[in-house]
Amino acid sequence: MAMNVRTLCLGVLSFKEASGYELKKEIEEGMYSHFIDASFGSIYPALTQMNAEGLLTLRSEEQSGRPDKKVYAITDQGRAVLAKSLAVLPASNKFKSEFLFEMLLQHFVSKEHLDLAIDKHHTDLSEDLAKIAQKQLHQDKSKCDAGSLFVMGYGESVLRAALNYLEAQCPRLKKVKLTAAE
Amino acid sequence: MAMNVRTLCLGVLSFKEASGYELKKEIEEGMYSHFIDASFGSIYPALTQMNAEGLLTLRSEEQSGRPDKKVYAITDQGRAVLAKSLAVLPASNKFKSEFLFEMLLQHFVSKEHLDLAIDKHHTDLSEDLAKIAQKQLHQDKSKCDAGSLFVMGYGESVLRAALNYLEAQCPRLKKVKLTAAE
DNA sequence: TTCGTCATATATCGATTTGTCATATGTAAA
DNA sequence: TTTACATATGACAAATCGATATATGACGAA
Image 1 (cartoon, rainbow over the protein chains, first blue to last red):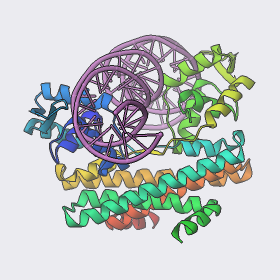
Image 2: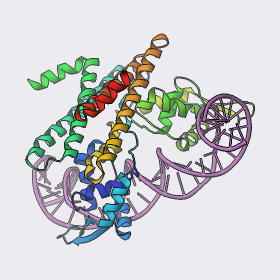
Image 3: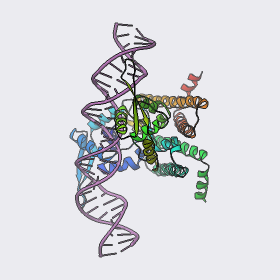
Image 4: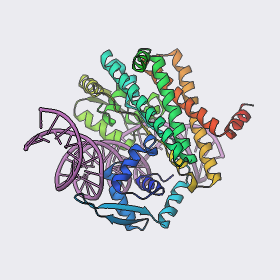
């Protein structure tokens, strides 16, 4: 899959038009957040470029005080390019975990620091799971397309597995959980 | 955690000395492969730079035919820098999945292509799991430090969860598995 | 009331990183 | 035999990140 920021933006815009700022928010907080990332520094140039190439149209929305909102919408040509990008087999998943690196090199850090790192990771996983659970509830009412459901289910499975493993390896964490549930 | 290619190289070299090529192989095929990635284009400059800064020592090994092998070893100063980098709480896991992007935008691709993508992902997961299983067997005999065991267990849990979810969502895949097991 | 900071909104820029190519050569299979 | 792969280092363009700059309004705290 020709997967880059361009393809990502086209994909998000295929659901609804949006400004660069809104795209970033959607990628950070929406469905996408579980499996992809992008920064302003790559989004804005990509939008400008694709607009120039005719893959997007641009509409300026005046706003009081703030800079004009530049709302981008995908064109038929853009949809064609997106479809072409998707028509290649996707590359393998890539997973980056500083936590696991730290666990591997644990003989270099104090027990106290390691516990802190484990706690943080536990919190990260829990929060991600909670976010998905919230989305799943929210989604029931509105559109529930197959893709979203699949992605949320995948994320839930994987995160829960990681959380279970972590708690099994560090029984201390379960106490924290029980205390919080009281 | 000040996590970048430098820290990564120092971490790998803290176990044993190695050349740039061997580092890349270790990162691709060893423990590290499950949670990090790095290319030659970033490894070689990092090694050169860290050697100049005194974090590494360099020893040239002559080889017949091939270019000299440049074997790097970590110094006490390097170990100090590594420890300092590790003494910061690790950033959250980052997960990149073209497969999930494709699943989310499935209305843009044909059913045939989607099936191919699912099959590929299934194969990817299975192969990764097999690699870990092999490593777990291999490790029993040699050193079995806590870090390695933790990382392998984590990887196994997460990959198995993904595989189970995939097979539950696409019952077609189970048949393939049974056929292969015959 | 002034101060900090958060949210909205766009954009640039240096630093980092990736991915591809170039350069060698030996081994082994097709 | 010629094609591919493994060893080995490195350069380089392109992509991407992360931090920062620029505005403004809202909201609560000192």
